[in-house]
Image 1 (cartoon, rainbow, N blue to C red):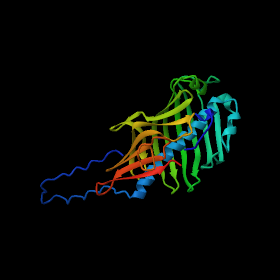
Image 2 (cartoon, helix red, strand yellow; image 1 turned 30 degrees about the vertical axis):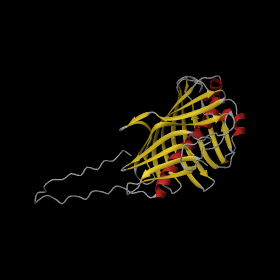
Image 3 (cartoon, rainbow, N blue to C red; image 1 turned 90 degrees about the vertical axis):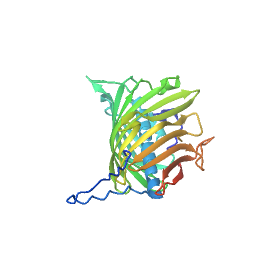
Image 4 (cartoon, one colour; image 1 turned 90 degrees about the horizontal axis):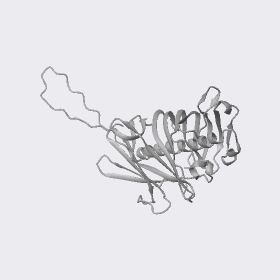
Length: 318
């Protein structure tokens, strides 16, 4: 995740069960159709699944942080000085419309971003509802928003929309005064991966921001029931063409201000379900995959291989 150092930067398939049906076959009955074997994933494919889920989540959070900052500074542009290669068009701010235009590397030179995100705040009867108003809903439209990881030139391109509700109202000022800020997100995104694969993902989650003695924490949780999952956060089709659902039995959290360990998830469990295969991501581990006692190294993902033996790989955050 992109490290940010100022308060204005405040702002993650259905389980398949095979049924073997036996019985007597009549002489004139057609031959049974062989069952389709369950997919077997290689270690590299499992790594790709984990990377895709983590990267999509992280970059969506980063984009929402930028949007949150812009919405709280609707009439000002001085905040853009802290975000490299981002310009904010506020020419239609009087109608609640703000456009974020990206054109280059972030300040840490970890990613390059291009494209735009158009923010629309509620606008009725020539009046804009400010973002800090309780219940205000902002719509974010992603237009070829492409994030390229500079370490390996891998990219993700987003098109679609996010609808963000500021449930209890407030912003950075209220947060610093001790209020808890809750955002509810609903999204329908078309994701294009670096191999040209295009998939549609649905997103349903909450982001909660708290401040304890200057230590600002963001907590992300799945908040919807989808099929048999009660903490569903994302569902759709992965780049391998398999339907999936991401359930978050344990929310993940990370520091946004007041710590040297910013934007590294400290805790959280995310489970990625596809037919006959489950991938579990555990955040906040050391390089061996054990729970970290200090600043975490990365996240561990685990799965059962074709021989029903558990495998796992640890991936660093950066």
